[in-house]
Length: 152
Ligand SMILES: [Zn+2]
Image 1 (cartoon, rainbow, N blue to C red):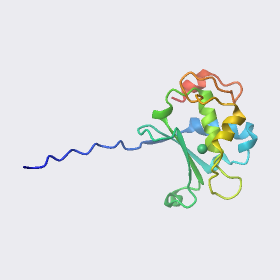
Image 2: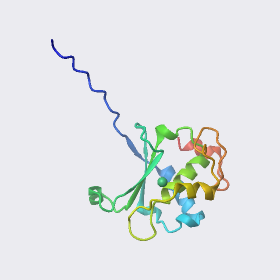
Image 3: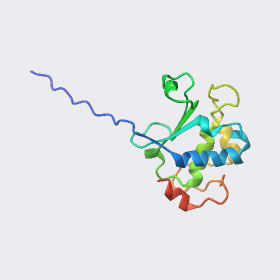
Image 4: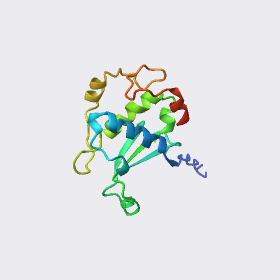
């Protein structure tokens, strides 16, 4: 009897886009938050990834020893995974961005494995800060819903 081969489930390919909206968001945080004031925003590539759903809302990459370094002067890359955070408000995105920026060291290029618990305590975030409709602190004054709609 012939074995029925199961057709392999096709894994979704990651699809990346440059994210000028995230670049602007990071720039505002770098100007206003002491914990990330050491970062040169131009050394970071910001991307949206729209297809996959990894176990994280966002990730920070060190490019300095990556083969892609041949093609860019950027030292770091921050990716936001749209499928996981499509419901995020602008304020929630700002918190996520601050979190990712916190991985970038002041000296050298080794990513900082920062203390998430600490981060949450400083911002007084509830465990549900990333849920739809959660109330979160406003990191950037004067921003409103308009801006968050624009970035979708
Ligand atoms: Zn982190």
